[in-house]
Image 1 (tube, rainbow, N blue to C red):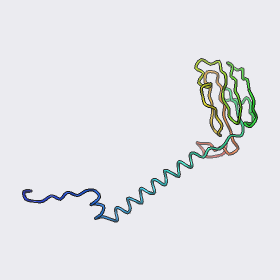
Image 2 (image 1 turned 135 degrees about the vertical axis):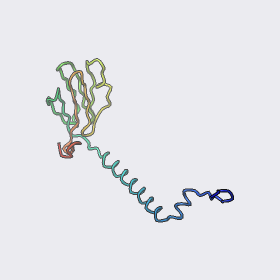
Image 3 (image 1 turned 120 degrees about the vertical axis):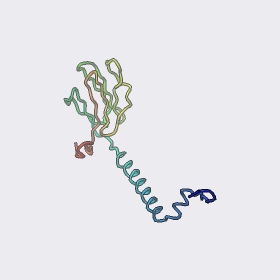
Image 4 (image 1 turned 30 degrees about the horizontal axis):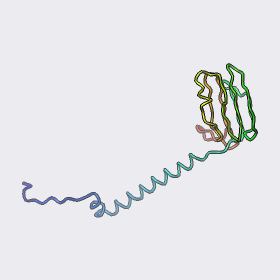
Length: 141
């Protein structure tokens, strides 16, 4: 058949949805559910707990534990020199003799699970809380 003389109507996607209202309702419901799931997951993942104490490790071995609320300066002299400062419920590395000084450039940490790592000196500083949840198993640490 010839297409000559046959009128082709231009319709938009909105016209299609107007004619098929049931499909449109389910689309809106799906979009609302997806947005709600995204918002809920953001709130669940951003639930940071304030830290209660500081753990200092050297190559996986726990060296010291200090309360986060006490202002204190800690000197660690193992495979290099690190000065760890606890001040105003935050922890930071104020001095290190490692070559790259990334640990010194790190921002202060205060929430449970946050950490500062000085890889050349084998040092890890972790903030812990009694409410910490293991990210892999979902259990308490």
